[in-house]
Amino acid sequence: MSDDTGDTVLQRKAQAQRKALGGGAVSMPRALGRGLSVAADALWGLALGATLVADETLRTERALTRIGEGRLLILLENDAGPCGLVALDRDIVTGVIEAQTLGKVTRFPTDDRPFTPTDAAMMAPLLDAALPRFASMLAGQPDMAHLQGYGFGALVDDVQSAGLALDAEHYQIAAFQISLSQDIRTGHVVFLFPEPPETADTARAPVTGKHEAVLKLVPARMQVVLTRIHIPLDKARALRPGDTLAISSQAMTSAALVVGGGHIVARGKLGQMNGLRAIRIGGEATSLHKPVALPAQAGQPAPPPRDVATNTSATFDFESSFDMALEELAADLPMVQTIDSV
Image 1 (cartoon, rainbow, N blue to C red):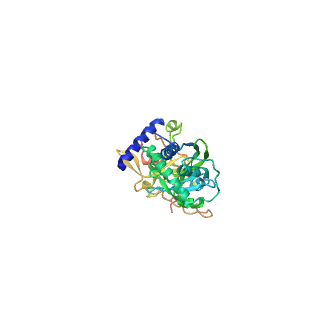
Image 2 (image 1 turned 90 degrees about the horizontal axis):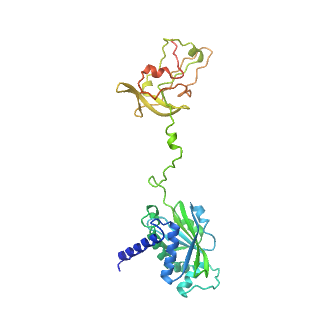
Image 3 (image 1 turned 30 degrees about the horizontal axis):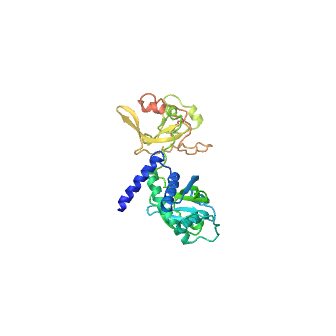
């Protein structure tokens, strides 16, 4: 049988297994636990039960704290992505070795010797048989594509060394309570698989609030500010009909759209469209020009320059068409300024 045929048969078995599990979408922990059980039975006729006890996603530093002490650490290599990690309790390692060497799992006590590369190599058949089955069960789920292609890697001496090999920012942790041969040996096995980095395509869509539809109907009033000029209060009180106010020559190209609170949301250039007064957003619009400075009077300090005033008491009616003359547009602007003749 060719390799391609073997893969096809394995995929068909995985599809049948997914149907037996109750649908096409299988969670990562469920597929992983099932893959371990099927692999142990297929290799040695070993009854392996896997019960999920933890499933969470954490930053790498915190994920490493979930490994625990005294466990065999094995890197899971992937040519197309960051490494994963598996940590196995000593009882589980001993039971798997016994299944391969003695043909059965015993209750002999375990020792406390350091783990060796040979111990790790004895776990390779189980991992290399379970991980492809695990990946096949997740085939067809785009959000699980990063879990394809994992296999046995190498022994890791300690948690610190494992941290140097794990490159991803976040890892998904799947921890299982493992039972071998009807609880003759039990222990924990912890898997760490990297989470793919978020991109513009995979980033979560913003959550829609329950009041979004109503809030979209709330009217938002915007003011078109052509220019701002500043004068002392006594001069403003002395203004009479027919007085002339000087504005900057840049006023036509520096109009701003202002919302409540004085926040400028856009700038534009004042012009006409279809016979109506209009404003073009963006383009060559410049920031609000600096107000014309008034000559200081004797005994009075000159007013400090200001770019934008915060008074937004004037209002415009945007419910009707934007058909207003320049004089009408400037008439309701707050804070006006006169220029003394010299």
